[in-house]
Image (cartoon, rainbow, N blue to C red; front, side, top):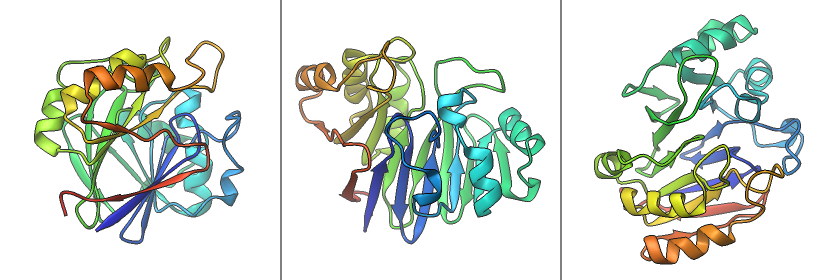
Length: 231
């Protein structure tokens, strides 16, 4: 089975599989690379890794207006309910837990960062048809990425590479080695002046740290298609 990933710039990713659309970290307003969110394919699920504005973004508005299921760590989920998302649409859970939303199994994994509500997280998505995607959220490099690779064998990882707020290109390349992932889409770069303007340093480091891993450097608005090795 196949699946697709569309990059809306920054960490804003939309995944399509088995007729289901999952939108992660829907930062549109203030994102110079993103379109008007009302113009994108309608999401069935919205996931948020943490509450910084460039990740929470327009999650509340999108969930309210589309009826999409919204998933986040417990405290952030409660915040979204208080901001006006109907409780019936919201699932709040915690690290290590797995929920199923519209046929997508979503496991919440750790991320090393900061936030105001709950704790920062990443997500492992087991898609209809067998594909597995790891969205790392905003994170520093951590050795337990090895466990994520061993347990879930992702088909593709979505990793921040910009530095300053997250791991940089060299660290992200090493993360690919720990994960043992065959393909990676870099994210969280080029958006703000203090982070890496492009993926060049990451691609160069990847050739040394994880030469078996293929980097797919998408342009904003570009979609990549994948065949699930785990199908």
